[in-house]
Length: 509
Image (cartoon, rainbow, N blue to C red):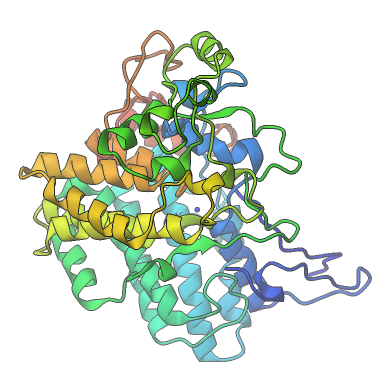
């Protein structure tokens, strides 16, 4: 394969610690000299594709969907529940199988094949979570089997396949060795096993409505992984990209060359909940309202922070912004070149997953203990990645004493009922996900109904049902154009032939 130039940059589309040349520095080759693609080169590209997030306005798009941000430039579809086409493209992994083939030893091949299975699991998970049934068993077989029009598999079959591929990934990493080309964990197979199994627990909890399905065996699978497999145990295990001042590695919403920094406002969904709980994370997520400060309030006063309801009509939002009575993003998101690491999956996220499983009776663990661990690790992550200056902390530091006190307080208020516990867990999981994890909170919302986001039918772009947030994306036009017969069959069995954004996919029934 000829390559004129290969540069490793941060840039992606739907899921992370930088150090050496293989960890993000540009790799330049003589433009006239052909180079042989090897396992490590493929691994780097695939891992970065899984980990990267887009920049500037595109970075903020998922957080409009999850109601963390209100956008003040113009009407944005996600903010007002307008959904279009989803993506089921597998281009990012269509050559992943070559990693194992090019490996120099069988042991290294195990590691690279483990990465292949994990990448496949993630990409198929993202695709099926977006639209429902997708091509799975016949997907990516155009070259090997000349299958250019793959049939669609049921969502249940896809999830069974994803869980099987994650199990294979764990087994292969367990019999593998440290491998090159890993900008995340430096080829540490134990770290990768933790990620694979933690992600598997996330997949299982997303299937919570199918608890009674014997084929899925959700309780048994969850308990087995929790008891027998390595999983995340600290923030150091997070699947995240650590940012720097190097070109292509800066925080995605850093101010330089970013004309969009003036448009995001922290929403009432975030600010009002943090104010309700008197949670100091408020001072790390947002800046105080300029009007409230001008009227004499201190930057350390909870009441100096004012969110904007993202469901308001855009004209009303524009009017509110003119009054300067709103909270923009904390400066650390725009003024610090490294911002904070951008997570795809974190230890805090895992803690809340286990807390939910315990609340549902899937495992014998203490739900409140895992709930508290999630809150504690989320707060520690913020504290460890924020300079301890008033510009960023507003004189309300997240020090050890505060974190211990706040965690204990949340634990003391943990509800007694199952439904109350799930609502509390989803709410804290949401607050811990501010500008992190992309649309994960949306998946939790459509599955559980929590947190209870405000819906305004008068401003909704969900034309078929303005009282609801859509539960899926439409299939991409490319499928209609090139695989229409198989798509029609899938639509008929799932949605009565109607490709519509309010139709319930199998996992939500």
